[in-house]
Image (cartoon, one colour):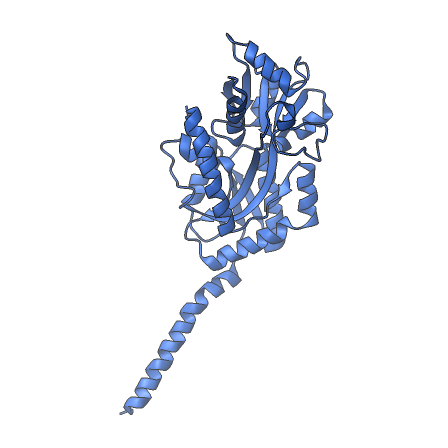
Length: 332
């Protein structure tokens, strides 16, 4: 029979070994991640600004993670379809999503039956980019500047000017609503399923105005053959479109709105895996390739990660939630 002290020492040694194994599990997970391709869900159609940033971010993550990142478009309900899918995915880091100012801070106030809570069901990884929105008209339009548009809207009492956006509750829709509130005009919103549908409608005369993220239309604006840029919504002019004045310069004092895009993982994704994703995003966003690519798209790489991004979102929800309630904006 073994002495009691020997049994006690043996038991303690076994327990210590087990505790070390338990402590090492997340480390092993982090070291092994990722061992296969990831999927980045973009909750909007192809060809728009969200798709552009999603694909550029996927490439940046690939370089940092040394693993393939596949982009999957899952549009619908102002981005809710795709982000709901992400929120319900297995929290192992292999499915992440590109959220926006719309999906993360606006939609919850206009969609009464949202299937996920952006504050509780998604873990913030990184702010991908920020960019102005822009107001454009067809090249054949008689309106040359923002004051022309404001005057025309005030004179059009019986037939409101129409404006297109990528959808109800999108950042550009809220930008237009904010524009109405600031200037005291009334416009008629015509939502489309992405820029690929709204841009031809503007050029063809089916709508009078187009609000969109600047990256989506900057090439057409700079070419000048089919559409004319009127003004950008940011506080300062965009270096990529220096001839476009700001709303604040053009008849809407104090106007300052920027759209943003960020990536998220499902809730309960282990922290070691989140740390790997955050580090990869931070590395990718600082590369010269991404900085130059975003500059061409009139955007600035993001600089908020993890909890800092979550804090930023809270302030954005307060701002846009108030506007949605004041304007009575609802999903149709």
